[in-house]
Length: 79
Image (cartoon, rainbow, N blue to C red; front, side):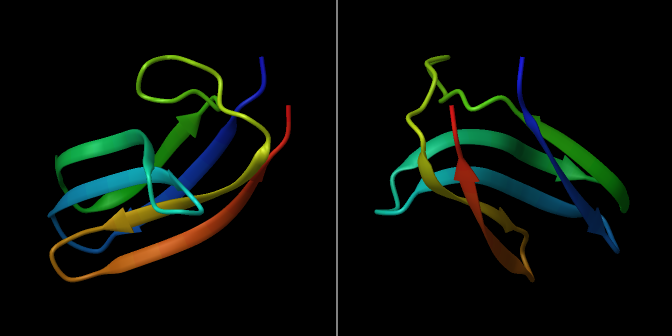
């Protein structure tokens, strides 16, 4: 089974919203939606959406949001 590991660090405790969305902005998968203490984190994404279905090959975006910070990374998913 293939998957990708996404790492991130929080310098202080924060409410974290970490999602995968497609190029047009539609949310595909919510990876994290909770408050987390400061520290290093690793999240796995297997290429499945929130319903458990495999997504199509293509470009996706991984967005990490906290109260004070937003970061978006582009990812290429290939089946």
